[in-house]
Length: 388
Image 1 (spheres, helix red, strand yellow):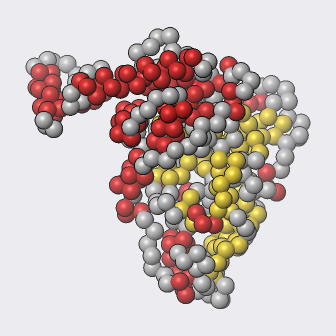
Image 2: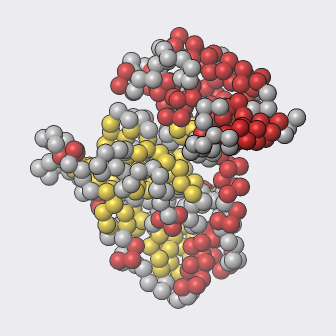
Image 3: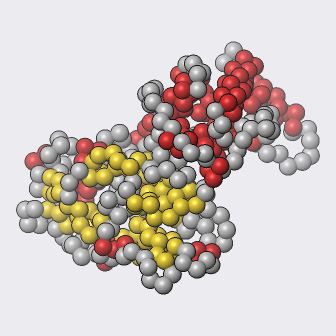
């Protein structure tokens, strides 16, 4: 019955209580799969799917990592249910939606409904010591141009976001006529502060590009007043070469100014308009992290609802265990944007790459493909024009 796994888990814990040793949670042990499953048939089905996928990837000359980046058509470094479903069908496997969702849940370490490259490789290579988990450097000509037709199925990450972010949904406190008093304009970002400095390793090789990340300094930015606010929508990346061959990032970096067009609307109304039309994200998803003495982690913002998107990413000068605060970035209405590949490569390594959007905003990809990003369709918007 449906309670059988719970009884199994309770029995396992009771047996371990007889032993005098430090106990770890059962779900972090090798027997977790046995204690979690209702019966053995779902395990058989999962292992059959892994074996079929491994065989088909090997026959096409794709390593696990190459496959992930080919299947991740959104180029976000995070595979969703639709991408996995489409990839399996492209391989000639005919899974049902329930099996795809079950597979995502098995591979997804942080239960956010999305699978990273490392999770995909670890999951699909499980049980096969001969599985090819080599990095992207082994691509042969033509493999990076693989196009997997996307077939949409319900997403788990939307359910995960909605279940944990109900309190973060935008508060609708202003009417359309009140929102008509406000406009959002894309402006040059004239004040920034360092987030992650150039590492010693980046300077070791003569002529090597030196990577750095900065964030907008909103408190000191011109334009912030009782009638306006400078709204952070992401961090910025630059890579200057030794000897001054780098590009001045400040000339291309953008920030959004939210202002009242009818004199002083008051700071309370300005803040209400900001929270209603440009809310903070519900949470963050890790895109790429590095290790070493000076690690950095790039994070993608997960919007509070499907009506909003993030047009930039943020960086923390820490490992992936410390998520950034949600107030670090604001989302924008999806209707203000279009989807396009990031146009400018800033820095790349075998394990990931850093890009800039047309607004100068940071984006990253777990691999060398340009990520798909959202960009504003024009430079100024009235807050009420889309009926928000």
